[in-house]
Length: 284
Image 1 (spheres, helix red, strand yellow):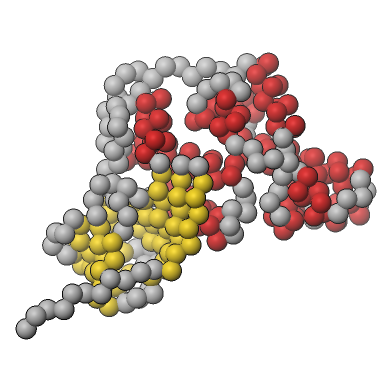
Image 2 (tube, helix red, strand yellow):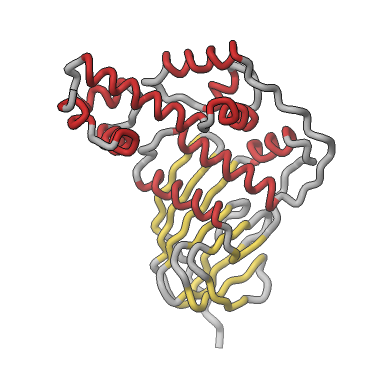
């Protein structure tokens, strides 16, 4: 009797692309026997626990194991194929640009090209947290903005380099230049002049100049906040001024201070101020 091949299954996927990062949020509703290949060089997080799943790597012998909620997969050059699941799955695939990873490795005095170590079904709270936050950005269509995603992307890249690179140091990293008082003023002035725009860490780092990874670290050391949070605070402060001295609506002010939409503006304003923009204006 000729064995029929397993069906090739697809998942319902939401996909978003940012600079040097692709995020896919997927739901695989198919259960039973099937073949479903995951993308090479991706990092995946599975959100739903499974008592039994069957999978194989590079066409090898299938394995049946449990899969806890929040399980992380680093595929590297290997191809992982799912063969059987007993209930639907929910996951995020994170794909970082090799150029980004190699640039960071080189700046850190590590040998390149950068190669991730293949690992499957393990727990990593940092990767899980980044995946959950990026999932929210995909679902909300980038509500928090590029600067926020850049910060998460850089956090993930540094974490992978430190823990899953498998590369060796080729030299002692050079000491990162500090941001002097004049440069810091220039950066702050640039932020104030461009609050309504789509600010990026790479733009700010170019003013120094230094790499965006070193810039973010040096900026936080000076200011006490990472760049994206400092900019968010400045946007809220600018909004407060506009609420006090103009009669612009909250929606108009939201766009004038760089928020993607009024609902995100209101949520962040309440988070930082304890009241909504309307309540703040009425209290003046």
